[in-house]
Image 1 (cartoon, rainbow, N blue to C red):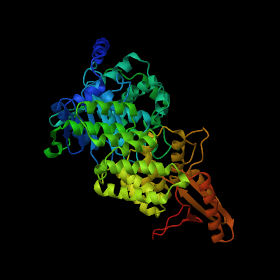
Image 2: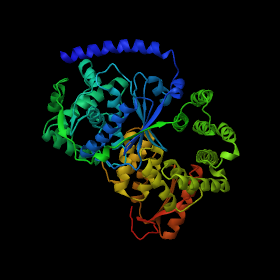
Image 3: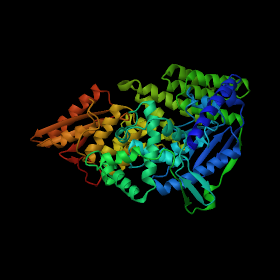
Image 4: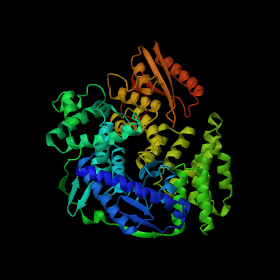
Length: 596
């Protein structure tokens, strides 16, 4: 009854706040708000927060993020990142809309952007004020738990548990040397109280992207409820651990959750339907012992010009509308904030939109005196590379060599930017460098941006053909969670199934192109003197040639290379065809013997 009254008060307050905010929005644009704000930078050991909110409030948020990281390390396995996470903590809805470029800012108050420049979090500090507590903080904490588990990790979590666990951590609070875990997010309480529960079978079988908006909201709430019921009971937690361990090893032969709990499905379903919707407890535990210096923070006032340049560059690299960025830059210049670096940001935005001529126009507008600046060199290299790659087989290798030199300078100037390493690896592959050379560059990119899907996609393929089962799993498992493209998901799963020898039904019954996994399985079943040749490029595109039942190994090798080259030209795959295996022995210049 008490929860019902709270929920009704919340809904009434929401309607009132909505009316007030609609009236407020008429007086100021998001561009004006961003340009005219005072900006601060808050830094801790693992976070950099840029904010136009109250710096003391954001500093407390930064310290709580550090504490959450410490607690998560106790409960969740993850591999630490090399870089700090940048968070844009925006003071209000106008600021959030301006930087995020989203229109649904009444519903979305926080998000993550994983890019080839690194990962960024955005949060609207004033979002959803009508909820008790701090929903913006909860959403940031929820997404940060995903951020940790979607990095370099071999964990492949069920969708319901991934979201439910993140919801459990979203409401964590800290009190001196203790923390409280398990409070229900009020938005989920409302869903549980007013909406029909998601059927247990649907909850357990759901995949990312398989549910409509209403059912996805129900999954968050019911996933929280089921995860809470499992995590905070010692015996059920052990059964959950066994189930997650089995789930992570593949889809075949996994004991269902109810069997690990010593129940039938009907018994678990009965328990699930009878769980109390509003009477879940929370738990207070001692904080892990840490040095006080681990939570040190600094607050710096950002010069307006620096803040505007950072916002413009973020908008450019995340592919926001060119017109929106142009409007932002025009207003900034009216406020006497001018820099040719803003022209460079416009060039990158046009590049992201696929408009090479416009991108080059913006770059040509930068006077020669500034051509030595890092921001100009980056834009010049990226635009030139994109233009050459668009020519496919007609790429000018002399131009690509000049582009390589620019990326070498960029890496030497600033070696913590992932895209510099990634595009250097692409250039080296196009120029025909030995695979081990460009693989090293790609690895450096991945270490700096493990959640960027383009980098992780290519890296997973390279690890697969290296037959590095353990590291491949660490890259492929979080990538599988992020992919929404059916063909990419199926191809990645085909490699995972083959290298881990997973039996049983495929991930999807829908027809998709064969992945490398299916190709390698076919080759392993071939007989006689046999060989396989392979060309794989940075897009994950590949050409493969097989030859079997030969009486001479050299004939098999030559036939495989010839077929590979024919397919490489047909499918326009960058890179060279190389002999990959003779028989089941992988051809390798190293001393370690590797077999298919």
